[in-house]
Image (cartoon, rainbow, N blue to C red; front, side):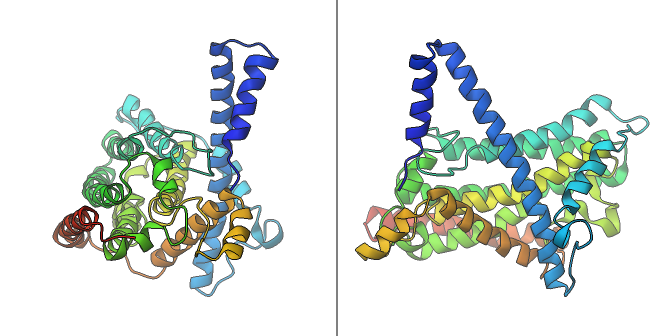
Amino acid sequence: MFDFSIITTWFDALLRQTLGLGDFLSILIECVLVGVLLLAGYAVLAIILIFMERKVCAYFQCRLGPMRVGPWGVFQVFADVLKMLIKEIFVVDKADKLLYFIAPFLVIIASVGTFSFLPWNNGAEVLNFNVGIFLLTAVSSIGVIGIFLAGWASNNKYSVVSAMRGAVQLISYEMSLGLCLITAVILTGTMQISGIVEAQTGPWNWLIFKGHVPAIIAFLVFLVAGNAEANRGPFDLAEAESELTAGYHTEYSGMGFGFYYLAEYLNLFVVSGVATTVFLGGWAPVNIGIEGFDAVMNYIPGIVWFLGKTFAVVWLLMWVRWTFPRLRIDQILKLEWKYLMPLCLINLVLMTIIVAFGWHF
């Protein structure tokens, strides 16, 4: 498996030794380059996900989806981006202007921040702290503040109701998400994201295999809770069009709305990426213990494995969205606090017992 750290080490040596730059300039150039690549990847993936969503939605509803702008409608997303960029941004009368303008940035910062934790390849982790799982959950929580502020600052009763719904839902399901991640941490013995992936390299070492039933339960609960955390159907009560006229971002236009739209799709990718990283081996290839087969699998780049697994989970979550009807807010909270939370707590104890007695592979 190719180690991307070879390239990063070479580039660092190029700046420091060949060009003779000091520590400050070298680190500054590296940070700027990584930031540009990260934002470029963020934008490209958003375009892919929006187009994919429209085509998957059309498939499940026996339609064709976008077809007119470009071949197979591939340029429809670019046309929508252009339209959004040139639309006028206006502020509602008597709105809290400071909070109104800050809210979309908080949501996009939380989305980009969690996106930065994803391990793309062996040695290609942007943020790789020894408490990575803890920081990942902490950064993702910033988005709740952005959603609440958007509704509160808009001077719109529908937006306030939607913001309250969204905040309650996100805070509730973060509990199950955190417990699922702690279950994985107990099994792997590390909170470092790269360490969790490395613990899953080798034959049948993905957590859903080596962790037996508790890891499978944690994976399934993580998908449900992650779908709710990303505000996706059937958990999209904060954006209930039929009763809240679009929800907390009703009063936003132009790129103010665009930031929320962008963050929703990338949060879908982030949830799928974290599920892939923690439970499906991340960039680790499929190894089954047969030397020839494993050698062929190891030739495939890690980023291909990571993107392939992540988009498979994305497709599964899109399938769920366009299959099940929207739930009521009381049903959503009942599912979390009455069923998922107790299940996660029991599952956590069960995983602790399995690890303590060495009953895993």
